[in-house]
Image (tube, rainbow, N blue to C red; front, top):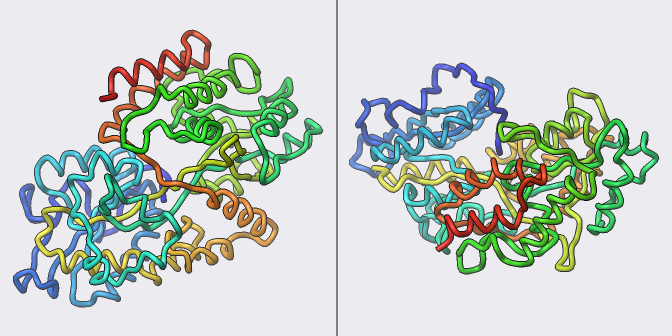
Length: 426
């Protein structure tokens, strides 16, 4: 779940993430307990990102569920906007001041795994959690190097979103579930007109990597956890992706490295007929401000099928948390049936708990519900866990600005990937 990113003023029970984890001073403990650590009477702080007042209001609803299920605990929420959250988490980590229950985006887990307490089967049992209650592969989101470091609260994968109006204006057939890369190329060509492009390339990590991964069937990190940006199949697929701009001319160049949401903005602004983005933005695109009719399909299939990654976020327990028992109780409630049902019914995010997922679709308008469900079902049918390295954030930070020169034809995708491999590979 990746909420909107505008800064909002929190309610009284929401404190700034830059404060000490329990408000006991800059060097205060992550939790305090009135009974020597048995859980009852403890104060647990839950850190989460939020970008708007509506985000905070939604989190407050979840907080109330947690408090109702744990009346013997004091549970407080503290938030920061997405762009600030991880910077402040890094600061808190260096000072040993990470909140007992800390939210984590799965794609960043490898960087912050050391901050979390590894969870055992006994921990899950104590928290009242069974992996069988979650979507297949959901626990991969909060796993690293074979160790579980938290529990997922949502699951996501990437989709191709398309503008039905632009396809109709071009007289082009809309994309269909089960399509191939030949179909994708044909659709991008047919939807490209003098007024708009058929596709918008991405700048974000999975906004641009997803089609090369699907085409090649290869992740840029191998099964041993080693960086594999120069795998020949991945390089070939990534080069094909760049050539959608430089050769096929079905996508526009990205003007600046600062346009980090280029593909998504071009699509939502009605300037491109298709773009790749996560399932987390499905509801936003369906209700886009431009007013076009939005559609969505799974990633096209390559020779190895429609390879897609399961993404998402979760909650973990800080390694230095003084009251693990209390934190486990809170963790169990945060991913429990009541909290997951409430999140799904609001349409805020697609829950990790399988039994709650039908409520997400029920929250949608009747005229789009079946189409969205079919797209989600197809997209999640062949997902695999994302592999990453401990320096994965650095890899992507280095790659992103270089994509501008790749899309303009000033340098090749192969050279950019080779340089990143040389800099960050083992």
